[in-house]
Amino acid sequence: MSRARPLRSFRGQIVGLTAGSTALAMVLLTVVVQVVLARITTNDVDRVLQDRAEAVISSATASPATGLVVPDGQLDAGVAVYDDRGALVAGAPPDGLRTAFADLASTGTRTVRTYGGRARVLATPFATGGASSGASSGASGVVVVTERLAPYEEAERLALVVSLLTGLLATVATAAVAAWATRRALAPVAVMAETATEWSEHDLSRRFDLGAPDNELSALAGTLDQLLEKVASAIRSEQRLTAELAHELRTPLTTIQGLADLILLRDALTPEARGDLEEIAAAGRRMAATITALLELARTEAQVRSASHCSVRDVLDDVTRDLATGSAAIVVDVPELRLGVPHDHAVRAISPVIENALRFARTRVVIGASSASGAVEILVDDDGPGVAGADAERVFEPGVTTGGGPGAGLGLAIARRIARTFGGDVRMASSPGATRFVVRLPRG
Image 1: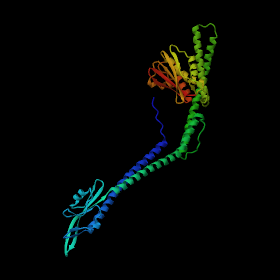
Image 2 (image 1 turned 180 degrees about the vertical axis):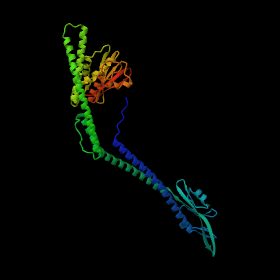
Image 3 (image 1 turned 90 degrees about the horizontal axis):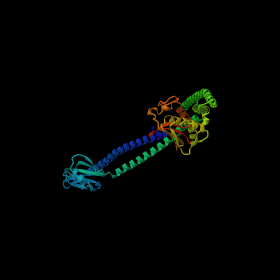
Image 4 (image 1 turned 60 degrees about the vertical axis):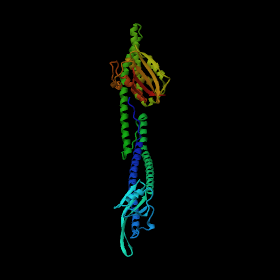
């Protein structure tokens, strides 16, 4: 038996898809923002370094006596000036970057480097001129400046947190809006589905009748109206056919049963002949009861569904009382359970299954029952040759017989038809060492 797939909410799928798409878009947007922000931050740091270096260079002077001279007012923290020999002449490198400043002290080109992700350093060569005692002279050197990256990184982290929170809020808001919109949009569809289900079970004559379709919902209503009309037409045709066949069978069956009863009134009958006639009369009564049940089912199917309850044990007592067991024994072991089905119809749903089991059983037929999910399952096991897997469904088709057994092939088909009328079913299930049929009927 295949396992039924769990139902998935269409509304849930829409909300999930919307929330997922929004979350993905916000993640991509956050990544883009971080990349752009990192680029802007790098450019801003480089601009600050360049401005600080130019301020130092513009204030630097040179003299033959002292060489490069830089006013103390231009020597901020993280600024160092080196002469053309790489000697420190002004400022001081910060702790932790002394080696980096020393490496850049004699560079001949503008150089920008990042150290450890915590500081960015700019080294800019420059040349300047000065005057002393009326003589012109010039000097060259390198100015090295650094800028801490921690404040900029803190700003980037703050921007990341804000972006993530914004993305989360946007995703939640989008999901909430999608849930609200889909609930309002699909609410009429759910109502129509429930209404159509209710009509299909109790009143197939009802229709939505929304007129010519002007939107998706009215088009759906029109489709459901057509489907209900086809279902009603098919059921009416089946009911007519069932009633006609039952009427056609009732007349010859009544004749057979009447003749058998008349012959049984004679005294000059051998025991063997009397036993045969009694079996014919009993089979005729069972067939007459089946035909009556089919006629009632065809005429008042909707009313029959809400009829009275019955006991599983009472039903099985009636089913097994008149059955010819032959060489097979019937073992009944069922708890006290109630069926939400009229007694006669429960008998007609179970009797063909047990008769089929007796027809093929070698030594015994075991009948059990259990309660499951608002229903009662009657289990009928026999130790016969079994049913091939390919015939597991064919045995329920009208007119189909398997295994060379006698019969017209109508019993199991009628049993399934009656069971399904009440929301149940008849199926064949696998069981080690036995052939098992399961009759499922609503619990009372």
